[in-house]
Image (cartoon, rainbow, N blue to C red; front, top):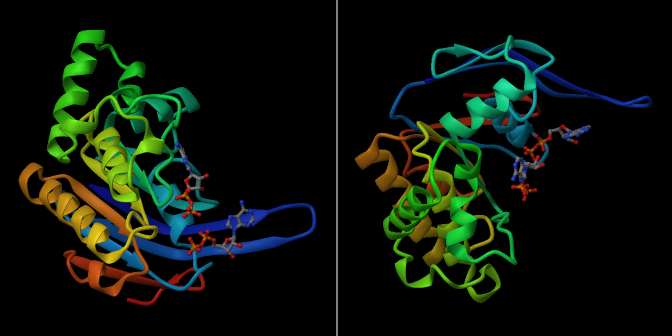
Length: 221
Ligand code: ADP
Ligand code: ADP
């Protein structure tokens, strides 16, 4: 489902050059739940951003869902991302002046879906994360765990094949973190969604199928 071959990423500015990733190769099967761990600054977010086609590698080959991505232009990349990938972030990235339902509908605005279908799909996604009773709330009226559940609903509303999660439980206490983890595991097991998760939490990582560790831009196992 995701294939990275010999990925190198160098961030360059006028004065500094940072080697963020060095010959990373990773094949992730359809239906796999993979976690990525490693110390701060080792390249985890960079790797996830490359898988999410938010950033391009300096060298190497990226294939997502059997598609070689280097030949896609920005518009095609945006469409591909919107259709195939769902994103979840540590800090939720909800829009505070939109109600929960409208937040969840956002990814569908770029698709050929009527307003009525949008509402229905968003309502279904919110039911899946157990938040049917919060659809008219604003994000500021929710707990951290509830906000993350809204973010998951937004990530799955377009039925992506892949979810990329950057420390999804990083801002949550362990009870709420476990709830989020249970939802991700259900999406993986019931819907067969491929999930890649960056985490600092060994307990969360050990619930996934496979753990990849990075150190200083290189894979250590
Ligand atoms: P992690 O997610 O593991 O904390 P990152 O992928 O964010 O690590 O960063 C990896 C390395 O790349 C770090 O040394 C960081 O300083 C550097 N880096 C990340 N983003 C940029 C950027 N936009 N410009 C320059 N260097 C960056
Ligand atoms: P952190 O792990 O420091 O909290 P975030 O999880 O907020 O970082 O974001 C991780 C990465 O995703 C960052 O590089 C950020 O620029 C990018 N990003 C954040 N929000 C979005 C978004 N809505 N769409 C695309 N990229 C985003």
